[in-house]
Length: 217
Image (tube, rainbow, N blue to C red; front, side):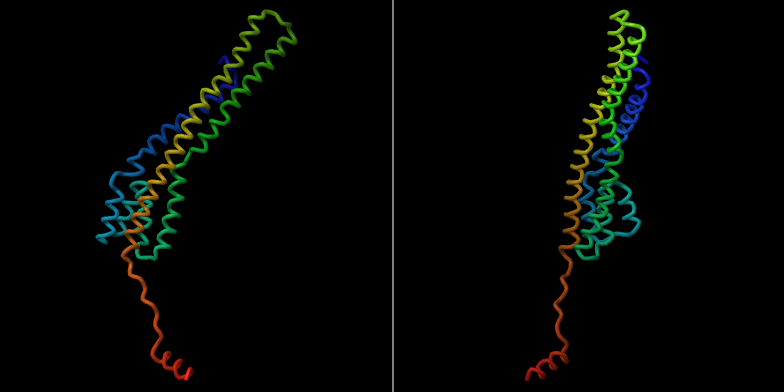
């Protein structure tokens, strides 16, 4: 109340930032993104060859890493380049979902101090307009008005600083997950393609070879 109406958007931003932080902390838990032992288990499935569509659907819905590995298993009989392309396409969607709401959190970290500064400037303008019309009056009252105006700036910084720190933290966390998921996907890709038979070189038909020799003679 002391900060004026400009405190309302700051408080709304703080509530939104708190909701995003709690949601991302729950969603980006390591065991939910990278279940322990899942990569080795999936590679064992690939070796056994006992994979059905329902199995792959369950794997894809279990975790972001499972979705990435399931996309490779879905095209496991294709050439290596096609499997790699499928992994890259799926990886972009997975990373996009892991970074959900982080742009909003970064925006709150950016506009928090600006909203605080706006409230302070508006409060100072109102106070000086009152001085212009009514005189200086009590200096203690003016000092109190300046202190009330600065409440907006302090509140904006209190909201923005943790939002910025947590935004950078979640970004680095997602980047670390991406590296670990890329490693697991590469190991599965090697498992799927290392034993693929190489195509035999094409040989000319006997009649074509005989015709070539006769024309040369």
